[in-house]
Figure 1 (cartoon, rainbow, N blue to C red):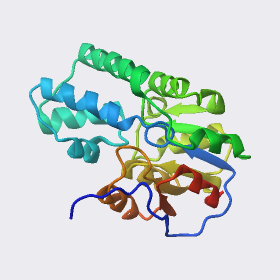
Figure 2 (tube, one colour):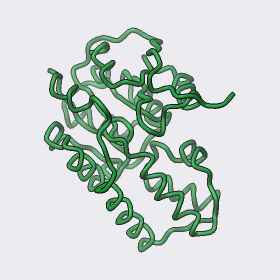
Figure 3 (tube, one colour):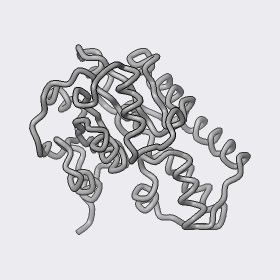
Figure 4 (cartoon, rainbow, N blue to C red):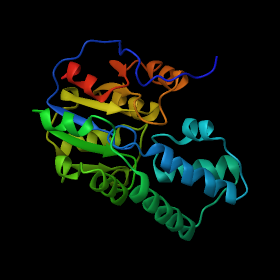
Amino acid sequence: MADTPAGKQRPKDTAPLKRPRLIIFDCDGVLVDSEPLSFRVLRDNVAAAGASIPMQDCYKLFLGKSLATTTEILSRDFGVDFSSADLESMRLQLFDLYRKELRPIPGIAELLRTLDLPVCVASSSQLERIRLSLEITGLLSAFDPHIYSASMVTNGKPAPDLFLHAARVMRTAPEDCLVIEDSPAGIEAAKRAGMSVVGFTGGGHAQTDSHRAGLEALEPAAVFGEIATLQRYI
């Protein structure tokens, strides 16, 4: 069956939630609608290196993964080896695209203004990229300095290291954290960390039945497509 938009679908609850003491937001696809831009740059550079990966396959392979994991998969499975100069060029391309086209997820700024709980960001992206994304979209002040990157831990998502690091720095027990994630890797990482997690499908890359089904298969506490729905779980 062809994919159909999932962003407006009714949320699906799979488990009850207690009120958290800390909300941990992923960045790309949850706070900012960056994944279509990021994967456009990745796909184009992979193609220039001689390999062809359809966009939907890019999402399945790399969504929520760290740069180290992404480059490892590209080298192992596609024979694409990016040099440090290549990666720097891709970084500059992406940042230029962000400055032109990056937008916040609809409703996130309004939600952050109403929250009465501590919040932080835990993202697979490099710290410079996270901060630029939040600055461009006007969200940086809501999180700074509580911004955590996969570069701060040994193993990125789907390992639990990053979420456990964020909880430790924020002095919150894992069982008192609620994670907001758009990727299967992120949901798996949160569950392995012993945290509650909900799946978000409102990003431009996530509004398909197949993406939603991939999140639901991991049995997060809920899956929903409008950020304001988060109020229901806090």
